[in-house]
Length: 204
Image (cartoon, rainbow, N blue to C red; front, side, top):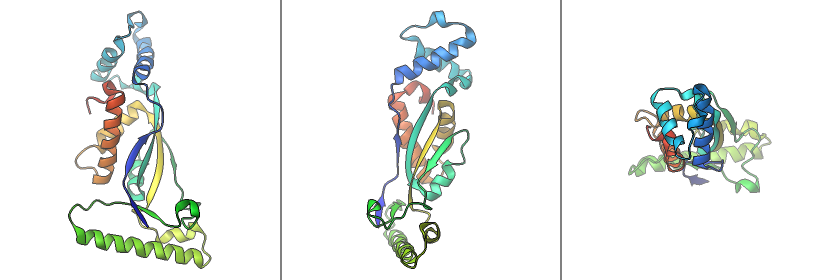
């Protein structure tokens, strides 16, 4: 069994200036102000439409992100709309195969300094892994053996949505009352977005 860290990985090449130019081009159609476009106008224009709440213009660009998280957190993420999702399937992935290292991967719950809690959790995960492999050895297919896998099982989830929906996702999932693990990967993603296309996410 391997314990891994959660993460958020932007899958598309990000050229922040090109993204801003495309959104500006689409947005200026509303005002027929294409004649006002300059090399420096995109950031000002987009900041202005965000301040005015004209965020439908942000729907003209979509980005795909690969989340590495536990299955419990993935259940929270897939509730967001409008988005497209593709997720690692425990029906078809057989973790006894070589390509999975003949082990399950679980996401570190990050209990902090509570070593006793970590020991209890780790033992429970080991027991679940053993039960999973015992079921496979008993002739069960992965879709039946998965019944004993823990909620903290690592999953990979690709989420694709437009920038307006990413803003909505991050506003909700970076909040202090979000689950700590979803908040962690949301903040990882927010920092990456801010580094690449800051105008679109600076107010979050």
